[in-house]
Image 1 (cartoon, rainbow, N blue to C red):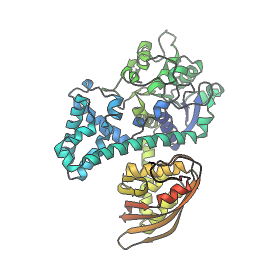
Image 2: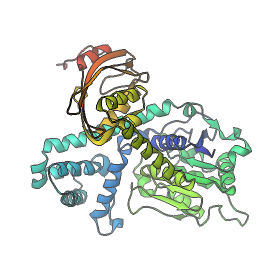
Image 3: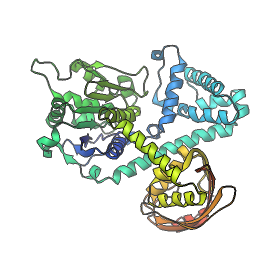
Image 4: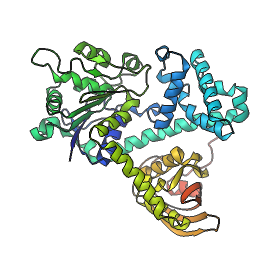
Length: 486
């Protein structure tokens, strides 16, 4: 089994949550032997900045926005996108707006051109993207101003929920609570395999000149293993020292990392070091390779070294490591095969719905959603969730199993009509361990009866409606006052 050391900071500045979580989950799922380590063995801490909602959007939203950004100016070098554009000016909603326009009957090319035109006008004027769309007569005729603002608010809520879920998942992984000290790793564990350095402000505090970090990277490099970093994590590369000829060990390598422009937009928080990743790599002898614009996903692969520019590049950096070991296609095929197998084996609508709840009872959200069309319409009116199975339905289910770690789901009655509509009466039971859609965590136990109506077509769930008494849920979880305070 290939060994991978996931190196995270234990300095006050902390590590970037999504970098570390994506690496741990996906490398573990691919069958790699993952060891979470810190330079000094102290428990790692999360960089608070990494829990900002702007860093917790779905890949398809980020990818679509990258394409829109490239269309704004003939030369991408002329486009300067800041975190304010992504967060305060709502640019990240572009893909969802495009989908709504297509649902309203627009051709895909027309929707795309209009979004590009409005995004450019908003960027040039420093105006809010959503408000600019409401002023476009053709867009406003297809999507009301209320709906446009609702989509933006929904995306921000999705980002906040994803951030909270990431922090909770990291807290549930024992290796992140009791990390392995680098100094305790054996020679066999230090050599070969791979090392993946997560970003976060802490990395510039405890890695650039750390002899233990340098020893690890030199050994992996000498054995032909993979060295991968994301964002601030590239600071660790400065620890490798020099070759016998006096040049830096990675002199002449094409490397990426957090750019000066991106660094200027990020608060240092509790980090104690005024330090530039870009300047540090350049001064050491790297050929610094950056994306045309800030906050665009960008990964550089040079021989056995893989570097991701910023937090938006973490997923692609993980992909590059998996590809190096020949595991990327294998994991894709395994996932596709599993979904196909699920659909082939469950042809009966009633049996499919029962399987959906059985998988949810096992907290296997991925396999539950394998039975659902990603574009399926979902509606959970009690908590105001509506949209598509991906991402809205997924966010709801992941928040549910995260907020109630001992969640049990029992289908007490399931029956299907001749038209493929299936009605399921279920009981959801569990003890709250985290906030859930506005209900603060008071560690109360709940058991709530629900009714789900699902439309099954051609072996897939195409529509989901779920109903329950929110007042009953509030009472179970200790919410005493349900009316607004006047």
